Length: 175
Image 1 (cartoon, one colour):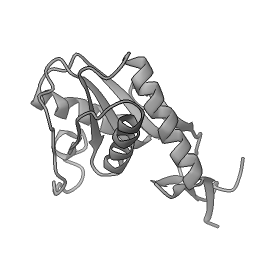
Image 2 (cartoon, one colour; image 1 turned 90 degrees about the vertical axis):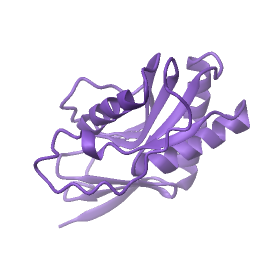
Image 3 (cartoon, rainbow, N blue to C red; image 1 turned 45 degrees about the horizontal axis):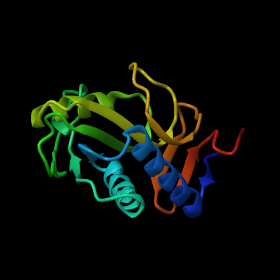
């Protein structure tokens, strides 16, 4: 039987975004050279929310998006139709890129994003911000900023939006 379980509500998501924005500012000792890039699709709304919160706390930073479709290592295993937009608002050379995604799972999409970022310059550093870290990494990738660590089974799926985080699957109701 498939079940659904909400693990974060809208207020929890808002608080996590606020905390992560403070952590980004603190870790970077201000915001000099910081650029926030959301990974298409799930990371774009989160990048915009983080950039908005950073602006409320301290000041505006460049915010854009990056499509990683053509950089994925499974490109030959499924049809490719890059329909998402890449919008890199400033040169990335010597920037501190905060790469943003909604869910971190295997790490393969992050690897593709790192390859895609290289097409736009050579950043000084890349930091990873995710709202949900599921575990199950296949690559040695670790986020710098995490809204919630959420151990899941491989059969569960995690849906993330500004309205909350929901786990769906046969194991979703079990702790």
